[in-house]
Length: 275
Ligand SMILES: [Zn+2]
Image (cartoon, rainbow, N blue to C red; front, side, top):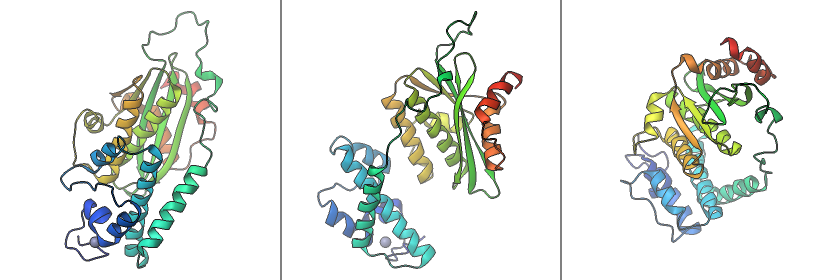
């Protein structure tokens, strides 16, 4: 596919985000000394390498400029607008400012008290982890509309927290990666030993390999999971059979069909021994 902005014959990620004159003007003005990635090096490796040279605040600004450059390119295709580099730069700066001014959720502020296992249970099941998290996705309507479900259980098998959301995706692997990314982040916020399950074997394998051939957005989620794992040594990712992942699958399917009850965490806690 050719570039919609400069009609370059091949629109690679590298071209779209760096080499295209539209993108390049932004980098020259905002980050004149920023080393651009070599087209042969995976994009995420380049981004990761930057974290040792720039403070996190600068990395965030770089990511917002990348994101806005991509958005401007999409607006050219879908709205037939002509992107103007100074406008792309100022939109990226304003989105970054908006993002930094949002109040961030404190990891422990919203944890239900049930997260702490009751102390006097006669014979708690043996577990090397304080929490187990199950993640799954469900595709609905058309392949680009999906939902994910994340279910958190304490070491006594009680369902105590979770998350479900619908979103747009471009492939099933991307949806699985998003589900696992959400599960890993939830695990990191618990700050306790956690086992995070996914029934996507390809994805679990990818996390132990150094692959570069993923669809771009799935690669971004995989990169994010890897980063969470690097920062949270108490989290382990494990493959689980589809049958044993039925709760997360139910949450994702119900969310996809818009039939997930508001009190689904409490409902699952009651019915989970039956599943
Ligand atoms: Zn171009």
